[in-house]
Amino acid sequence: MARIIVLDPIAQEGLDMLAAAPGIEYEVRTGLKGAALRSALAEFDGAICRSGVTINGEALEGNKRLKAIARAGVGTDNIDKNVATRLGIVVMNTPTGNTLSTAEHTFTLLLALSRRVAEAHMTLCGGKWDRKTYMGSQVADKTLGIVGLGRIGQEVAKRANAFQMKVMGYDPFLSSEQAQKLGIQRVDKVADMFPHIDYLTVHTPLTPETTDLIDSAAIEKLKPGCRLINCARGGIYNEAALVEGLKSGKLGGVALDVFVEEPNTTSPLLKMPNVLCTPHLGASTEEAQQQVALEAVQLLINYFSTGEVRHAVNMASVDPATLQAMKGYLDLAWRLGLLMAEWQPSGAAGCHITYRGEVTKRNTKLLTSAFCAGLLEKALDEEVNIVNAEVLLRERGIVLTEESRPDMGAFSSSMSVEVKTGNKIHVASGTLFGNNMPRLIRLDDSRLEAYIDGNLFVFTHNDVPGIIGAVGTIFGKHSVNIGHMTVGRAVPGGTAVGVLNLDTVPPKAAIDEVLSHPSITSARVIPMPPAGKLPSWLGW
Ligand SMILES: NC(=O)c1ccc[n+]([C@@H]2O[C@H](COP(=O)([O-])OP(=O)(O)OC[C@H]3O[C@@H](n4cnc5c(N)ncnc54)[C@H](O)[C@@H]3O)[C@@H](O)[C@H]2O)c1
Ligand SMILES: O=C(O)[C@H](O)COP(=O)(O)O
Image (cartoon, rainbow, N blue to C red; front, top):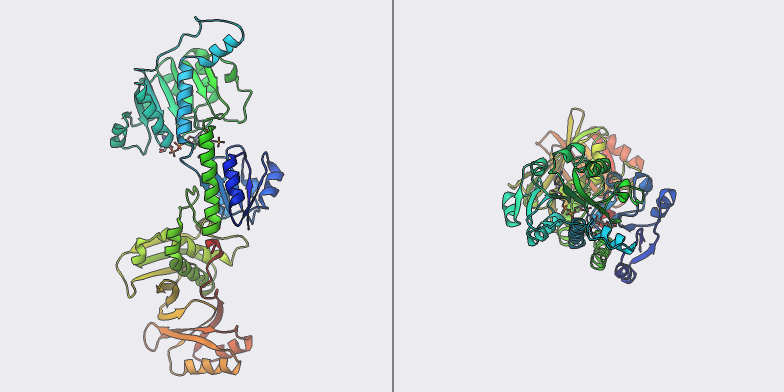
């Protein structure tokens, strides 16, 4: 049973869906912070939030249970994604559910600011019929500048065009063709539009690049009387600079839905004329809330029932069909990681993975993560999975590189991992027989065809006659049954490797006896998961 905590109010439809989902139970606990939030999160497998709760590093610290956070909305800046990734917690959002509502809210603010609707309303409610003070400004034939032309920015552009506005815009990912299609005059940098625009609206995430994007220096360069709107994130406009710009008369007006500090009832802007503010209501429509709640709940249901990862913001998304199709390869990659963790001495400095043949057409990044998860699984006293494995590996200073070679080797598909320790490189290569039978096809210099499950007994020896018989006799004497045996070598008469699958773990006396053979140079038991047992993070 997966337990889900709902940390912010979400639409009833979402709660109903949680209640009806088999294998899921949920609790609504809103308004949590600090230690209360941390201990609550430790009791659940999944969490749903909006922008109200702050899931910072402290809240996640030491959490060994939480696997997934679904954000019913777009912005995930209230979640410490670095810490979540490190702990193997996948963070997903619902990117499209509130796009139209937020674009509409942006336009609502733009129009209401132009006509000073809120101020006129408040004056009238105060008993004054004032038709002189609230002279407005027509938007038709004015120029709107848009920074950030993703989902919301583009919808705002469409609405501006419908209101006969001229639209200029900047987004590093907006092509000239797309800009032309949307009726946007694209500029190469934000400042290029400053002298031309009557309105500016921003629709970017809050990042180091967009923080204080519009500060006093930028406001200086704006056309006098320009009106600024922000329905994205507080902090993209420097709030002190807005106050100054309004006081000096440089700015014609400011409309904000979002603030640096939220909730916020004390901003000096709230008391200024030509200012219009709403308490982060961009996504607050029945339609948007229903949509994002249903989407967020579905994300968690899918994650806990099939392992599907969609709209992840801290890892590559993986749909169930891909997972299903890659199950065998994920198993192989994970097993090669488990094997290498035992085969190479500690102190790995780097890992290089080569994919060959048909497997290169698949999501090899996922396979690399699965290998890393296997490599670290036993060494770390924490959850290691495909979300955090690469991060954990790199954190340990291990350089990870990957290459794909579409040409086939001896097998239609193979993956080969090289682990560098000091001046030595250890190699393990594997392939998949059928859909779900991982096989080891190379260990260091020796080519072989070994199973990678159960109790592996791996020994190195000189390639001389009598070794297989000698090892078989020793295990027979100790009543250890050999299920499968393979030996491989690089060249006849050189060094060779033997891999046995034993039905039981051999006693120490048996291993010592094997090691006492003059031509056997090393021997060890490498416990591997039974055949068919998939990593727990796959959810199967
Ligand atoms: N007020 C609200 O209630 C509300 C509702 C929904 C979304 N939002 C916020 O609106 C923002 C945009 O949402 P979206 O769904 O359109 O996201 P999106 O990812 O579709 O679009 C964001 C765009 O910003 C662009 N961008 C990033 N950095 C930039 C930079 N330095 N300069 C110019 N462009 C840059 C990206 O290329 C992208 O095209 C998000 O921050 C989101 O949290 C607020
Ligand atoms: O990023 C978002 O989706 C918006 O800021 C909406 O936030 P909310 O879900 O808290 O209304």
